Amino acid sequence: MSYSKELEIAQLAVQRAAILTKRVFHEKAKGTVSKDDASPVTIGDFGAQALIIAALKANFPKDEIVAEEEAEGLRGDANANLRKTIWDLVRETKLADDASESALGGAIKSDDDMLTMIDHGNSKGGRTGRIWAIDPIDGTKGFLRGGQYAVCLGLLVDGEVTVGVLGCPNLPVDDSVSLDGSMASGQNDDEGSKGVLFSAVLGQGATSRPLTTGGLSSEAKSISMNPISDTSAACFCESVEAGHSSHSDSAQIAQLLGITKPSVRMDSQAKYASIARGAGDIYLRLPVKASYQEKIWDHAAGDLIVREAGGEVTDITGSRLDFGAGRTLKENKGVVAAPKGGHAKVLAAVQEVLGKKTAQI
Image (cartoon, one colour):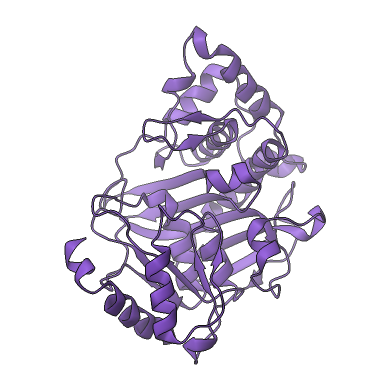
């Protein structure tokens, strides 16, 4: 099966959602609230999720959806102003190309329908059927600080990631741009040089194209990872937040591999996208808490894009990420992503540095 329609709808849905997130990104007040786990969520998260789910439900009504946000906190009179702000964003956000907008199924009809769309993301996941995984704004803290973030969408078929799309509004369009401080932080005054749509279909390779406000007019360009025959010349990508990945362990692994370049820290699945197109080489997400379980929406699209670009993605034990176990990657700990030719060496260094920790996590 080619999954051509799924890919097209996923790409257009992510582009439309990115329009909304970029509008919020440039606002001083982003309507931030805290969830039960103390993590932040913005009006952009809610609005983008509603738009993506509306497109999926219009085109694939029988598919299940696993998404990060829920609408309970938006209901009731006490939250009327917040709900109205989100609804205004949603009803005003459209693709510039009418045919593409029509392909997505048109506009959401009311604020009540918007809340219903958001809550369609309550699937428990699993190993059978078609399930979409959505993170409307991955890297919310990066989004809030003006750095990298991503709009993420992946299709699981019987637990296997089959289609993956990442919209990265603050990554440079030029694939040849190296990872450096300005790129990682998202600080670039030339808006026209930023914004990339990354895509992959299982067995069909990975591509990038400029992230636009209309249809898919530009030609998709095939992307691939650096082969890194010499790991000492590699560039590490890791999370900005120390609470997401152990920076001290990463530093020891880099030393063991002979890597002297400083690691580049950025938020979101933009890390997967960056190494997939050769702007970086290795992505490590090392466990910091034994009880923490990664969420499938934080990795599904990026995992496929890296693997289709010539990489390998495993956990710290060398096992493939298991997206069929539910809403979380409860069967895995950590993430090690690297080109196929160098992954085994990187994994061996990870396991050597973690040592006794691995057995305790």
